Amino acid sequence: MKNLVSMKDLSVDQIHAILEQAQAFREGAISKLTNRFTVSNLFFEPSTRTKMSFEMAERKLNLEVLPFDSDFSSTLKGETLYDTVKVFECVGLDVLVIRHEQNNFFEELVGKVNTAIINGGDGTGNHPTQSLLDIYTIWQEFGTLQDKVISIVGDIAHSRVARSNADALSRLGAQVRLVCPSEWQGEFEAFNEFDDVIEDSDVLMMLRVQHERHDGKTTFSKEQYHQMYGLTIERERKMKKNAIIMHPAPFNRDVEIANELVECDRSRIFKQMENGTYVRMAILELLLKGRE
Image 1: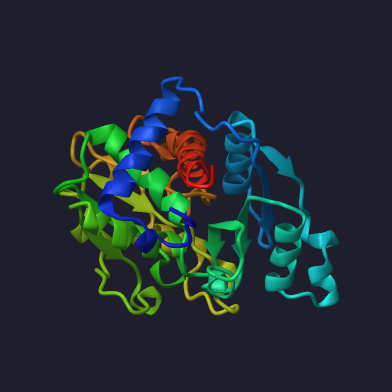
Image 2: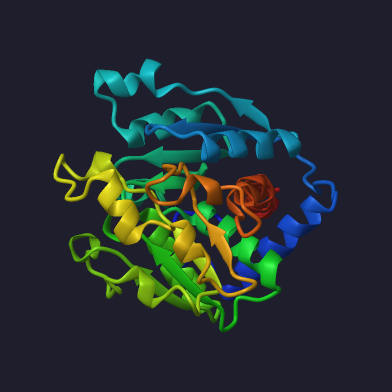
């Protein structure tokens, strides 16, 4: 693995290797990296969970982390992303974690720079590390993805999480169902009625309504959306006995999910966040082992 920009970069065997390495780190394994690698996190969009868990993962692996602040970078002077990355390559960085508003930003980088690229989220396109931590959380819960029914509910058309998960979960044997209002369906086939998928789902994965990508054209009020597509207490009561609730976060309480359900017994939302550090450690470990 030279870069990680899309879940399509990974074979099923590689996904399982990441899950197993994440579990090893969770159980206290020590990194086997022998070189002192240097990494930086280039985030051009807001982030809390992804950025912080990458920084924690990097420090747990004893990597040298160089700070980057997009508000004080030469991109504000018109420098292209490619030229910015070439600067980091020239000063000797081994890995760059990049989040950018442009879909497929990595196409101008992969194969053209020697620094390894990890995609921390590109526009509405891909979010492979979130997908991997979601997969790890489900695998941790059930021991397998095979034949699990996973319903992803919400703003599908604007969700890089939905895109990455729909591909990867299906390849791992899960039955993936997308649920959303017809106007947020995009190029996907989707259910338009949430209540049709609740009772037989093993996982309900709720998505944030991404108002910032709607150009001010959001159709629903928060209250309307919660009643039509939110995980209400009434809907939670219809879930299978061992079914779980997930959300990549940030979440809007009482919009995508009732406030009372965020930390209920079924919820794995904060477990996902915790797992993010171990999964990102595993990704960095496996990527950097190939550079030693």
